[in-house]
Image (cartoon, rainbow, N blue to C red; front, side):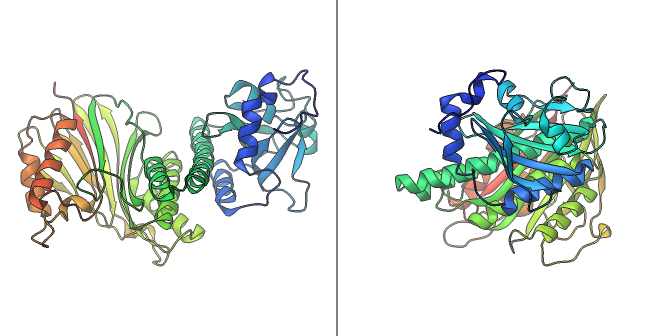
Length: 433
């Protein structure tokens, strides 16, 4: 544990908590140089908010160290005293801090950093270790006093979680390597980090999602894959549902999937059109070029209302979504769009949108191609879109979770329990009246 050179006073006791300081030391981030993984997130924060500076700081008991500092002189000293920085407030409360006018806000106005950095407005969010200790903060600074919109605040909250997730992934890698069990522990942690632990409660909807690894036993395989899904609220009453599939496996797939998830969440708070969000994701893949891997994705932006939901659907080379109507009829929901690749130039017109409406009892199914490409070990016929459509129709009247279970059983029966690729499925069902 680092020696505590600053005696407790007005600083929160949490700053000097032994377990927190051990988590800071274990992160291995203090006194290290800038890294693209964190600088890219900081750059995205500036693009979203229009602020002048963005920081990811790690704080021990005496100083706040700038692991990422975008918008400041690269030759500037990359740390300041723990008492001088608002970071210690995040550590003490464990909550975000928004100061639209830092020079009059009683919480921060007397901190030396306000004058030193010329802070007019400040928005900071805790960054936590895998054990839940606040080890630092992710913040943006504007030179002028200004409010941050709710959409900007939510986007920054997502980006701060992305920083915490990056730290957790690195911790998992070190732990797995140290224990000599890298292949199992690392893959399990990485794969789980790509998927939400549970889907949020969505007004008027019964929702469910599942990820099945390419292994008949249901155990995690030897390499992490890039299938992912997400469901989250955006602006006002609108929600977004996303299904994606990154080509290949391994750490390159993780990099692309991580970039895709936090970019989609951030951009969805600024645009209501899924085609625009997918185009912005494509631009991020080209600009940041974290890997040569391409991905396909499908996205629905919808709004619950009286008698069901209405929305827009867009696809980037992804298998078409399916709608199961309340009477058991199955319809294909498709939209033209190129796959997303850092090697393929794209414009907004490369992505179309399709409007849809779900009434009580109707359901929307998003899935990855591991479902339709299920086949037996002797390379027999694929499960295919036609069999999937018939299997979905046969689930008429079933709730969301039962529907996905029965679809998986149908595909597994067709393939004799052999899965050549991972499969992800998500279904949104309007609760019957």
